[in-house]
Structures are given as C-alpha cells and as structure tokens.
Image: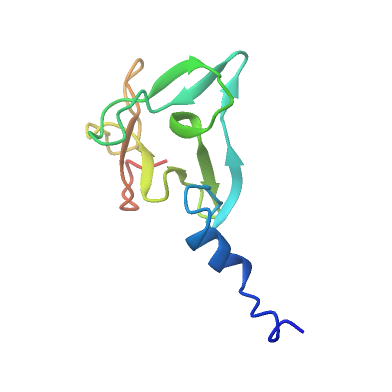
Length: 113
C-alpha cells in the first residue's frame, strides 16, 4: 500500500515540506528553553558573532531561547553552537566570578559546558 501511494519517510517531509521546523538532534537529551523564573537563557542575537549570552524574559517562541542538552553534557544552540566559557579559564577550569558565558562553534574544548 505504501508503495502504491508513493509514501515517503517522515524525514523527507521534515526536510522538504517543513524545513523550518527545528527538531532535536539524535544526541540531544533535552530540548527547549532553559529558564529561571520568568527569565530564559537567550543568545541575545549573538549566535552569528559568538558574543555573550544572557537572560531575557521568556517568550515561548524558541529561536534565541531554544537550547538542547546533549548526551555528552554540552549545552547547544542551533545544532553546532555551544555554550562556552571565556578563554581565560585557569588550570582548575574555574572562571572568575561575574564572567560572561558565550555562544561559540562547538569544538569540545574545556571552555565548553
């Protein structure tokens, strides 16, 4: 019956009919917004520039506030961007209080959380 109807796999539908739908990667454990109270972790539009991330009022629309947690423990945004500590991490992997977190290309370095 599937052959007669020329059915295609659901992945084909996602890739060709609804490509703008964001779906979790197969390595993701959790997918969605990361919130504390009424505030969510947000790229603040910095995903193109690798700038600092911050908190912004939760809006429930995904986009800049859409994150995933991978099986390896990385916090990712938009597939290949990871939440990263600044480059000035000391030998014990500590950063100074008040340091910002950044969004950078995932590279599995010790700066990425």
